[in-house]
Image 1: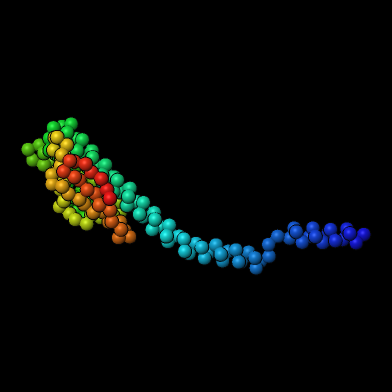
Image 2: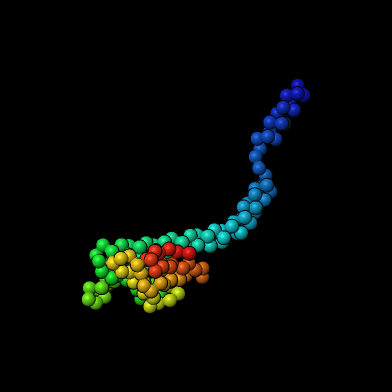
Length: 152
């Protein structure tokens, strides 16, 4: 009979679960890790958004170059305000075809920058525009003389 009692006691000990102290310790560890990790994850998120925004601007540059070649006319991208840029065509005078705006919190470091594309696909002048995210990190969008656009 003493054997049954020993088994019953072991069974009771195994099935009782976590104590309140163990639970508090686990919650404290998870909280400490979260305090350190969450701000870093938010910064990384903003950096990836910066890369995506720069990629969108490069896409607009490439599309403008293609339109210039296909229409056999000069076209340009004009950074008109800190977060706005225009695609314009030379139809005797510069007419605005499209207006784009950067997402909230993103800005260009310079305004008045003009990247002009010609019917042969080349660009003048060679130019770059810097994009700044809300954290102050930057990414450059470069247009080369050949008309090639990329971000760095």
